[in-house]
Length: 65
Image (cartoon, rainbow, N blue to C red; front, top):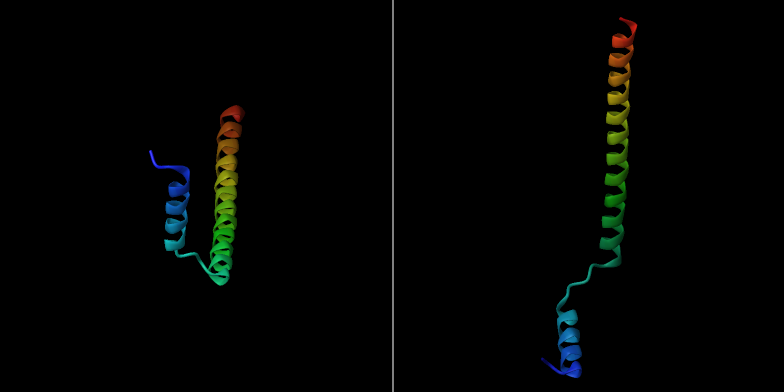
């Protein structure tokens, strides 16, 4: 087991090797993620409503007979 000072030195050395995204890259990625979340929520809401209507139609149809 390495001593804590050596461990922290190695952690800092590894952190310096990381390529951090620029502010612009972060903003673009965040905007794309938000757009995808909105598109997915609209899609799943539409599918949910369509399935609800289909089930209601089937239940009303079987109930009427």
